[in-house]
Length: 260
Image (tube, rainbow, N blue to C red; front, side, top):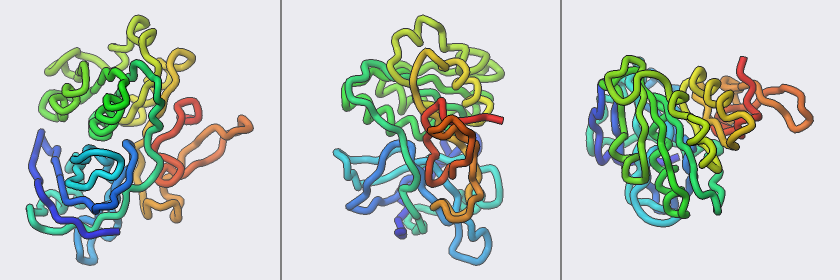
């Protein structure tokens, strides 16, 4: 746990915010982990908000100049967070959870993000590129006015955009880009986004490309103590049981996730 100073805080799309703050010198993390941020020092809104790590500025495995997240303002808690100013401090716990596994030797990876599931793809894209893996990002939004981070992802490779209303990129869904030709070139996929998107991606990739799903789930404690974020998963013996998204995830091997 640490109190970190806000370095940058601005709107990057409609109700979508970019928040950067100082990072501890000994920061250790993997792409796909999340930060648990307390939005106020008062007695209101005591529960922290889990927000995926988006980008860390610096070099190497312990980069510490600045850390950034992107989040959507959708309730009282995130509305309070939006009011925080540069120079103020945030009470931050993390990075928490299990992130994405990078595989050395992969030639081509597909990064699939939907809405607020796009931010964790930025740091992932950087690290994959550093190890020599070609990256193609496929990102989807409701409409152009809430689209984020295309420019940041384009630094690492091709970016394919889909919107529900066709106001940006292809009208449709991220899975519309997943042609047999594209999947044949991919060694791995990494996906984060709303449950309907993840379910569709899992079905599309099944038996074709191995990969990971990062689940979006409401959380309480963020450290596996409260059982507020359990999800159905396939166990090693083939049975279906429960895993904690905050501690066992948020990233799971795609075949392990059992959607209702």
